[in-house]
Amino acid sequence: MPDITYISPDGTSTTLEARLGDSVMEVAVKHGVEGIVAECGGACSCATCHVYVDEAFTDRVGGAGDLEDDMLDGAAAERLPNSRLSCQIKMRDELDGLLVRIAPEQL
Image 1 (cartoon, rainbow, N blue to C red):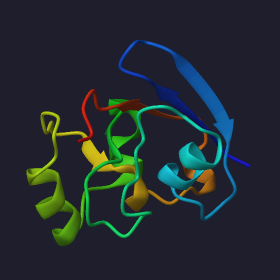
Image 2 (cartoon, one colour):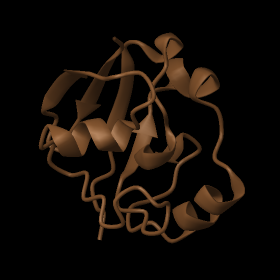
Image 3 (cartoon, one colour):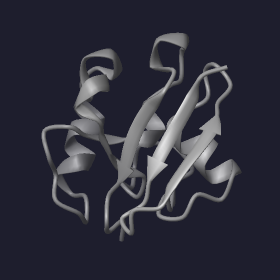
Image 4 (cartoon, rainbow, N blue to C red):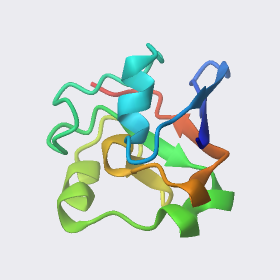
C-alpha cells in the first residue's frame, strides 16, 4: 500500500498508509490529520481539503479537472500552480511516497 506524507502549516509531518483507490482526503480524515476540513465529504464542492502537491509528484498526480479548477479559484488559501483538492487525488501505486502540504486556511 502506498504512503502519503502530510505537512501541516505548522511543519508537523504525518505519514500514513493508504489503500489503493482512497483519496488523499479520505486517508487524512480517517486518521484525524488536522487542517483537512473536508466539509463536503469529498464531493468537490467546498475546497476545504486544499493541499499543495510536492513538485516531485505534480506530473504523476496530474492537473485539476474543470470542476476542481473552479473550486480552487474560491479556496481560502492562496492558489498555487501545484494546488489540488485532496478529495480529487486517488491513491495508486505510482503515488507511493506522495508529499502534500496542507494549505494554511481552509475556511
